[in-house]
Image: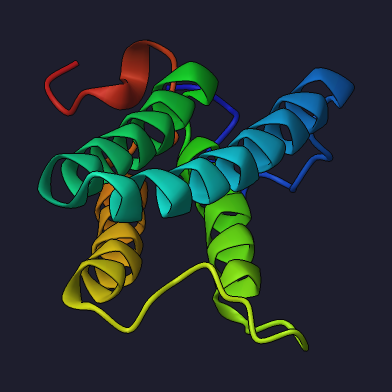
Length: 136
């Protein structure tokens, strides 16, 4: 048996500078993906919507795999969400990025659902060592 105890009993540590930089980069990449998806989904309606959602899902799941934790999926999802919500607001001139069509709502709700799905199935923290299996 290890003297470390359960993973839940370990004290919290600050993440490394590289991990913070990776999360910040994923946050920025999520914002760029959200703006690009907002432009593409309306431009080529059925294919553009699928392309925008596939790009968002790829970024969310890729971030989770790259960082090896759910934070890798949450960081780009947060950037995507902020960019999309900011771009839904109408400007004083009357311009807007999203129309009132069904494709815009599918992009908003589909992207949110994909963010939750990718953060849920993203890799969680796994214990290390020989005593992590019950049969040993």
